[in-house]
Every structure is written in C-alpha cells, then in structure tokens.
Length: 249
Length: 233
Image 1 (cartoon, one colour):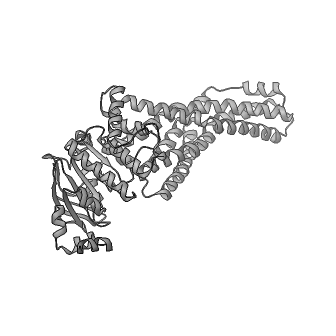
Image 2 (image 1 turned 90 degrees about the vertical axis):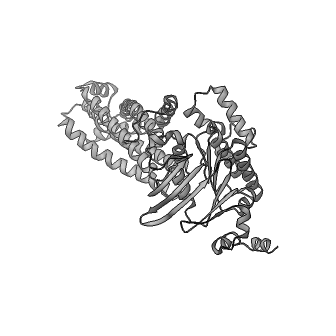
Image 3 (image 1 turned 180 degrees about the vertical axis):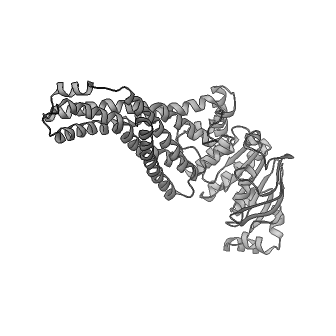
C-alpha cells in the first residue's frame, strides 16, 4: 500500500499540489484523473521520488519514502516499475535488451535465466518475435507493451503508469488497460495509473482519485463516480457529447 | 560532476559502455581526423615555404616549422575543436534526447545513477582515446606536409625529413598530450552537462547541442592559452 499524507509541491511560487492525502491499496488499479495541469504527473513524480515534496509524507507499506537520500531510496526503487507516457525505451538497445536492462543491473541471474524472464514478460504483454527489434521499429501500442514488460521484469511491488493510453487508438487502449488490470491482480501489486481516458475509468478503475487545481477534489469507486453530483467531476467526465448521451440513457 | 563519481552499480555494464564509447570516439572519429590532419599538414608546409623568402634560411626549416606547429598547436587544439563539433554535439544531443523522452527518468526510477551511467563512461573513454587520436593526427599531419611539399616540388623529400628530425624536443609531445587530456575533459563534461540539463523538446535538444559545441570551443581556446602560458613560459 502507498499512502500520501498532506503532500504539497510548488514550483517557482506556483502551487501544483496542495495538501493531498490518499492511500492506494495492493492488488488494486488506482486511477488518478484530472484535467491538464491538475497536478497528476507531479504527484506521480513525487510518489516515485523524481521530484521531492515540499511538505507531507509518502509511505510505502508504512515505511517513509519522501525525504530519504538517493542511497536510502535505492531499495525502494528496485521495487518500483514505471511505464512512461512515451514508453521511454532506451533507443540504443533492442527490445530484449530493454526488458533485460533492470535484470542486468540489479540481479545475479544467469543469461539463460534472464532470457527466460524477458520472454515470459514479453509473452505476458502479448508480444512475440520482437526481441531483436529496435524501439524505432515498434508501433505506439507495442512500445507501451514493451515498457510494461520492462517495468514488470524485476517483479516490482508497485507499478506506476503515466497516461498509458495517450496516443493510442481505442482498441489498443483497451488491450493496454486490460493488461494493466490483469498484471495488477495476477502479481498482487499496487498499481497507480494517471489517465484522461474515461474508458479506463469505467473498465479498470478499482479506486479513483480526482485532482482539481492541485487539490484532492473527489475520491471513490466507479459506481460512486456515476452517481456523484460534484460539478467539477461531472464537467470533467461528461465533457463529450457521447458521454452526456450515455449518462442520459 | 560530484554525482558522476560514484562506485558503479555494476562494473560490467559500465565497462561495456566504456568500450562502446571508445569505439565511437576513437574509430568513429578517425576518418575526419585523418582528413583534417593530412590537409592541415599540407597547407602548413606549402604556406611555410611560400613565406620563407630569405635564401639564407635552409629549406630544412620548413620541416621544423611544420613539425612543431603540428605537434604543439594544430593537432591537439585543432583536432579538439573538430572533436568538440563531432563528439560534443553527439553527446549533448544523445543525452538531451534521453532527457526529453524521459529515458533518464526511467534510469532514475530503476535506481540507477543516471549521471554516472551516462557521463562517466564517456569521460573515461575520451580521456583514454583522445591522446591516441591526437598522436595519429600528428603523424598524419607531418606525413601530409611531406606529400604536399614534395608533390608540389617546393621542398625535396630529404630536406623535409632532415627538418622534422632536427632539434626535436620530446617534451613538446608531452605538452600536447597534457592539452589533449584537458580538452577531452572539457568536451565531454560540457557537452554532457548541456545535454543532461535539456528541458523541452526537439528545439531545445538542438540548442543544447549548439551550446555544447560553442562553450566547449571557447573553453578549449581559453585553456589552450592558459596551459601554454603555464607550461611553456
């Protein structure tokens, strides 16, 4: 479980996150939603330690994470997998080398064992015969899947996904969503997903946190979100004509 | 710089990176270095003959001038400027692209010291290989002078060879290598710094790459003067 306790973050005097508290349970897909500039990405960067919080605490399974030095964070980091918006695959490495990278760095597995793990992870994200391709030879959806495979290769306890559906067609988005959901349940990990995609909210969200102007505005389940009368969240979720029509039905 | 100097997470991975950079900086630069050096030596020789109007000065002096100019200044400094353009821009754009596409964040998330992983092998490889590249440049520059001088008929082969053997000061080579090591440190660290602190997108990567070459070149010229003043006077 990951807990946020009153975290705040400002850049150049501009408040990005203000007093946000929440908790994200193990084995659940926790979605963080909100408009552009609402603070989702900064919150995720604070949670993984890429950005330090100004105030508040972040706890991983009860252990403090914020405020630790680089060296002290190292054991945590090796339990964290992250899927970036653009995939962030290493251009100079093949797909196989990308997925094997964290294993090369931090494990003492033999080459055979590492190859087995890479093939398992690639099969798990439904990719075959791509081991020797470079990132530039992959489609957007394949890049995301390789990024997921790389993130789960070292068997993390926490998986972070920053807008995993951005730039993907609806069908590929559903595949990625289902993959995240399956992996979360199969490996019993704590998953946090930043998303704009309302289909993801409806399909895979166990818990939803809505950020608005850097504040925690609303928190609840999918069932709750459809019934809420909160104006900001309704404006956000039912912004499109299609969503409005569905709500009427 | 401080974050860069750490105990590697896994020595074998850093070693592979180091070897890759050695190949990239050394073998990858040989073509441009050879071409530049040969023509540089040729031009120095012909210009020296052209300016040597006093009949009392023997033509062997052309060999001396060409050798010393190449060893003391042209090979270490001019090659470093060429390498700042080729390797400096490549380092800045590679690391800058990794920054804007979140590949550096991905390294950090995995618990890898990104500055050490990306910069240290490049710095070490440059320190190791640039002196060899410059020594090759010295030989090729002097060879280019001999080819051009004799082909143009402005100096005989024996006069040129006698000239390059005359009054040779071995310390000049040591001085050139001291300059080369300093310049290689400037090129790699300045370029890596520019790349590592890139913010934005493609436009900023291009800007970082340009800044890397400009700042490296300026620093090379300043340190060239400082080292010459400190060591040769």
